[in-house]
Image 1: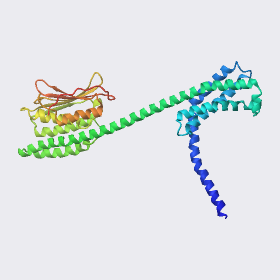
Image 2 (image 1 turned 180 degrees about the vertical axis):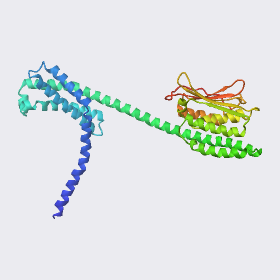
Image 3 (image 1 turned 180 degrees about the horizontal axis):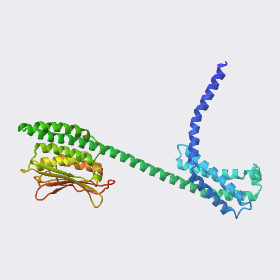
Image 4 (image 1 turned 120 degrees about the horizontal axis):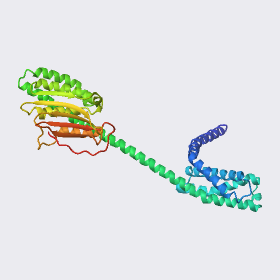
Length: 384
C-alpha cells in the first residue's frame, strides 16, 4: 500500500514538469508580443481617450487617465494572449480581435473596482458611474478593434517583407552556387585546352629534331609546376598572372627565338588588382598559336594595362601576327574566358577583339575597378 501514494506523487510531479515547459514558451511568446511600439501606441491612445472623455467626467483627470491606461494594458495583454492561445478552428487574427472586444467591458469593470470597493451594487446604484462605465466601454470598443486590426496588418506586412527577403537570400545563394559550379566546369574545360596546345608545341620540336627540344621540355616542366596550382585558384592578382605569362613567353621564345619578341607594361597599382586566374594566359597562348605561329616572319606580343576615364581597367594583349580571320568561329578558350569574366567581375566585364594595323590582333579584357555593375555586354568577335 505505501507504494501507491509514492507512485501517485511520481505521476503528479511528472505531470507538473511536463506542463511547465509548454507553459513557459507560451508566456515568453506573450511577453515578446508586448513590444515597445505596441506599448507606446496603447499608452498614447489611453491618454487620448482620457483627454476626450475628461469634459464628461467629474472625477480628476489623473483618475480617469489611470483607468484608461489600466484598460489599455489589459487589452494589450488579451491581444497578445489570443495570438498564442486560440482555437484552431478560428483564424488567429479573428481570435485576437474578438479577445479585444470581449476584454473591453471586463477591463473597464476591473478599472472601476477600486472606486466601488469591489461591490458591483455600488456601481449599479450610481447613475454617474454607470454612465461613465458606458462612455469608457463604448469609446474603447470603437477604438480598440481598429487598433488591433491595424497592428495585425502591420505584422502581416512585416512577415511578408521578411518572407520576401528570405526568398531573395535563398535565391541569391542558389544562384551563387550555380555560378560557382559553372565556373568550375569552365575552368575544367580550359585546363586540357591549354595543356594540349602547349604539349603540341613541344611535340613539334621533338619531331623536327631541334636541339631546343630538351631545354624547352625542361622549362615546360618547371613552368607547369608553377602553373598547375593556379588552375584551380578562385582568384589571383593581375601581377601574378603577368608573371605567369612572362614565364610562358620565355618558354615560347626558346622554341622560336628569331620569330617571337614580347614586352610587358603593367603599372604597379593595377598589378595589385584582384584578377581571374589563367585569363591573360589564355589570350597570350591564343596570340602565339593563331597570330605568331602562322605568320611567316613571326611577330611581337605586347601586354599592357591602363585605367580608363570611367574608372574601368583595360588589359591588352596585342600581337603583330597573322591577324583575325573574318570567317573564324569562336574557339573554346575565348568563349569560356568571356563567360568566366562575367561570372568573376559581373555583367560589366567584357572581352573585346580589334584588328591591328597593318596586321595583327588586339585582345582586350575590360572590367570594373570597383563593384561589378549590371551594364550590358556586347558579344565580341572571336577567332579559333
